[in-house]
Image 1 (cartoon, one colour):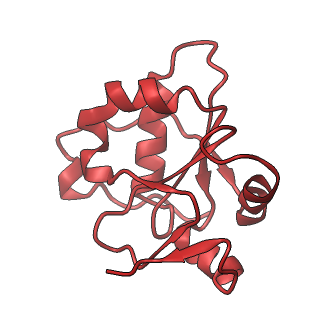
Image 2 (cartoon, rainbow, N blue to C red):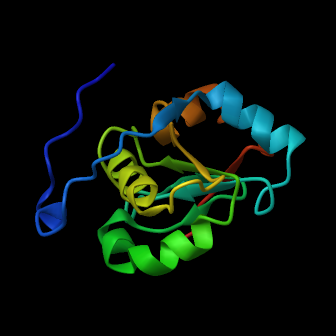
Image 3 (tube, rainbow, N blue to C red):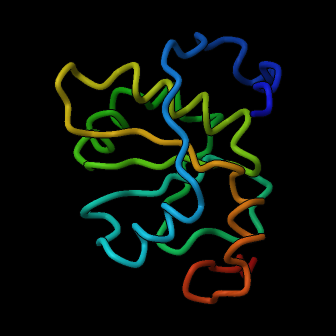
Length: 140
């Protein structure tokens, strides 16, 4: 397992998350995408901001730099999903930070489970990049 990345400048004014959510493999996420309903049974949260050239089909984009200030609202919204999977480019910095913040603020006894996509978008692209149903290219 790779060590977490150092705290970036944008995150220095925010607390470090206390939680360390579990990792989900690209294959496990693929199974969710092919057997469950996105936006009902789970949600994939892409926390990249400017380094997006493609997205996992059905993912939503909530940039890490704005995540913590919006945390009360995002906890209310994301906490309603049974499964929330975070990712960034490699899932070593932004995704673990945002996933930890969400997990920290979920009420006790919640049924929402928070995960980090192992290897991030890089691993997803390597595994499923040729599958047009699993990846959406950014047209801008």
